Length: 185
Image 1 (tube, rainbow, N blue to C red):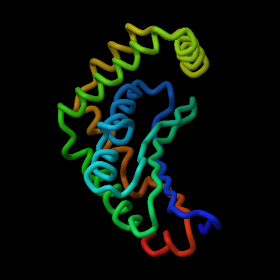
Image 2 (tube, rainbow, N blue to C red):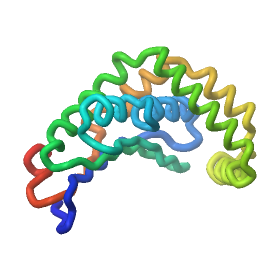
Image 3 (cartoon, one colour):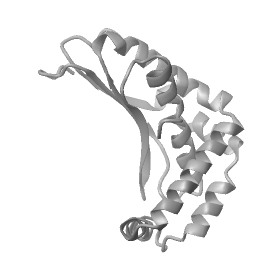
């Protein structure tokens, strides 16, 4: 789609993910963290730090009772879009095959540190509690969340990546200056 006045190409990819009550949610959160949530993620490291193709690239889940999505998004200059598109698809395809234990441990550590910080903020604790009650029917309990993350294995995350990140399950939306996205999409 063409957006007048847009100087960059904006891309969003969506994959059908898990409903919020699915017991594999901790593995999905770790999958997201390794894929595109934060500066240590694969997408950020490859597309921003290594290749310099984008300022920001990210992934994030949107989880509801009836289902969820895992979204990947970025913006880049039109001349960089074809390379960015190719590298994103490469990383999505590789994750299930070569995800390492070290990446999973870094993701767990970051999530657990973030949880500790959230426990120090009354508003963050309230938000976690409300979300947990509305979506899962239970009060938020930090020790339970910690245990759920700690017990996730690299094999669980790999299996989930293989299930969710398949090209045939991907929906995409790309917009930018005239003709920028249509050359590769």
